[in-house]
Length: 298
Image (cartoon, rainbow, N blue to C red; front, side, top):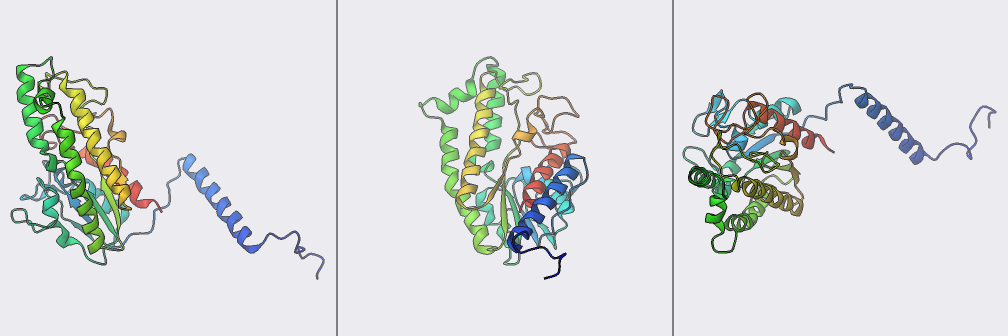
């Protein structure tokens, strides 16, 4: 053996050398990220399909690409597709959609599942709010909040029997979410599925802003907890089906509808920035960041 050749005892086994090289590469990448260097983009995914309701469609945010569904060209699926550069992109989201509209038409919009194929490799879906009648809940709470601004009249109206009806509704929607996730898996067996949660609407600290939106003082923390319950249910269903839950709530705390324009990511009433009680353009940008980060994970 030549004198300058490493002895077998000093050379690490080939698998270990590969591991050490990988660790070194990871350390370099970590240093670059800490220094503010841009992270390398993940490999472009195959076909990407977005499913969901108005919180996905970007209702009210100009410019609409589909008036029937209130779909915006600045919604989080479009921004996510721009970041990931998938092989193809189809946005089937539609304002007012429920879990039923995955397999049934909605006005002139075909069933959202029609967009899925065996070649689909990434699916994002944001659904469930309309199944618990989000619009009806907000409408009732606003009306009752005008009558009794300092109590909890809306909560009382939904809990008069001793049972929280909204909690029951959320529990009742869980099997429908199961069916949606299984339906996606059946139609796109090789796709990565991201179940996207709902961002903050009311202040996370339980306060209200009655002069902006007349929700009663005692109803605000209860409605906040109801949204958190909905997100928790979605997270549990995602885990049960091998999907990834994308938490858009935590990162949006401090950007609720009570905050001033420029800070809020959800609008208090119908506005040029979005539909009332829905994310505005800045809100969709934030959601896109969360979704893109989740999609880029190995």
